[in-house]
Length: 404
Image (cartoon, rainbow, N blue to C red; front, side, top):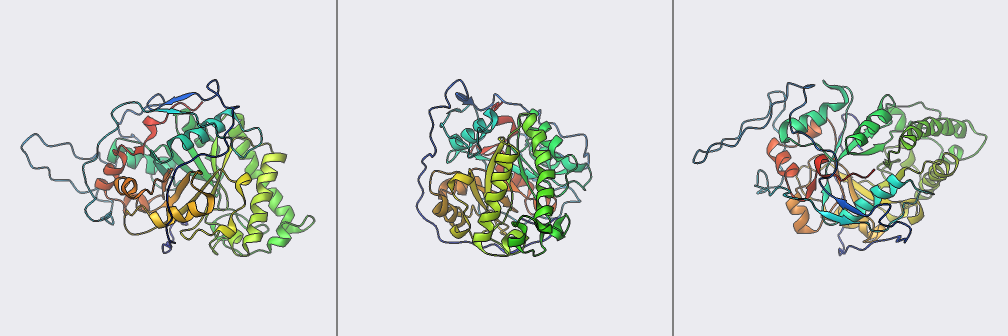
């Protein structure tokens, strides 16, 4: 994952064949629980720009027939973005014109006694996989307008809002409540955690400090005690969401097979032990049955770091490339690890993948999650944002069905 400001090169691996199937079917999830999902029956947005950030101007209106359309530049405080792939920027994209009906897939989350809402959410993602790609946007908390800065920008530029809001427990304040409020608006929350290395405090810099993972996982050590204290604090926040009947796309240990965060600095075996410990602690001790467990690789996915199907609901990878490429090689690399049935997410990106190219190439990501601040406002042109958010392959907030 990017820090608040840092950057890193993109990696990729060879691709493999694509075919959609489903996993973990169960007869227990019938029509009474999930039934039929109808896009467009969820919360809707007015399309009006938010009053919180009047600095953002709405995109130019279409010129009258016969007049040449001259695109206006982005706001003065937005630097010229890096253009998406050649020939794709600004292409006219068809809009969603009516409700799309999807059936329950009968998939069970890995969480024990998963909540109804968690099952609904996972089944929705399975049902849409390969057919639609959900839009996602990571929030920041220090820009004008606070945590809604990016959302206000997208709405001002496109008239739309993302289906998924990205949050981070690097700062606990208000994260749970914003996720609850987003669910109330019909949206989905994806939460990750820049977890400080046990005994080294919290925050981004602490997340990069090396620590002996054997000691972290050994009862009686200071590292073990510090780990439990951090897990308890995070579990308390996730419990607020559980008690409010809010499911979470939970992405701990993001970019797990990189060597920049403490959980990825040792061996794959050590990481798998960490993942399974957190899963068993949250699932068993804390009974957090509202979590959808998302495994987030770097741009170079590696099967040695996979905890196992019984611990993972969705897998993904990330890239901060300089074009709108859908990253087919990276997509296929994840599928080579988890198979063709599990949804694969583009769990972090800089420039949003071009939806038309993604469809053409078969890189049908379950969702994309654009990183915050200048990764959104400077790396993506306004024309590209509109092409993405108006594309019929992309699901926005107003098109998410009622998963409650």
